[in-house]
Figure: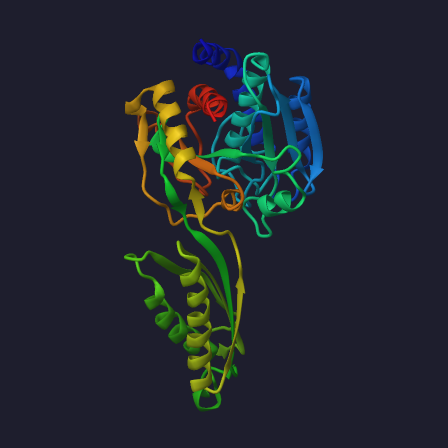
Length: 388
């Protein structure tokens, strides 16, 4: 039975996949700099007998595996390879050796997991139908998006991808569990940059000033009303910088934030509202506010049929009690670009373990995973793929 063979191969390749994950984790590379990671990926795929394409969107790698009747279908599986500018605080044998760079979002897991699936399916190529594309993508964490760049360079063509599967680690889910959500799953994401230009000077001479800090504060207080959990919409700012001092008012204040929502028409409307609020308040104080909105990832939409099929495959593979229905997320993910081109499913891989104290969140310097999660994960992705 094919499912049992996949489980046996998962056991066989598990230790190698853990080794790969640790090697990638110890040698993280930032977005658009994934040179050594892509070399490791390409070699590993080549060693499995796959046809390998490199240099796609700079450091992207694609492995192609042909089973029986290769023209009958084409299923794509995707992982991202880049790391974050975070200094790791974990004390492990595989801790980051690249100071100030860390796989704090689990892309080392995604990459190792997909390599594991490639190992499994390559051993079953005479028993499975269709063609399988293993897509290893640069720059998920940084705009411009690696997914968008790979799509523009034809990664979904030759042969044309019919369905696509991806995953993301979730420390809030226990290892051995998986989460699925059909339809709109993850929010769009835009970067908001505001530059408030006033008139600075000596802090004591307030009659001569157009204090950009106060103007910026009023802008932020008004913009917060655009956040609405009921819709849902999030407009959140994480940076405000005015290079003054206790007795020096600066001329300029810079603000940076993010906008998240689930509706493209609303997204466009919110852009206009942000611009209107900033313009109105700055004009009131005879100042100026430059608004720059960097369009980021679209809404991630899980195709209902593909998501239902993937969830059913998961229940068959690991048991219904380990397959969870999870809610939409205000987080964003550039896998969303693929979902606007082909029917796709993006699901969550549980990697937490409360008993072992593995609970740190994504994008934190102490993030780590329960590596036992990979044993089920490499097999499950393989099983979902062959049922696609």
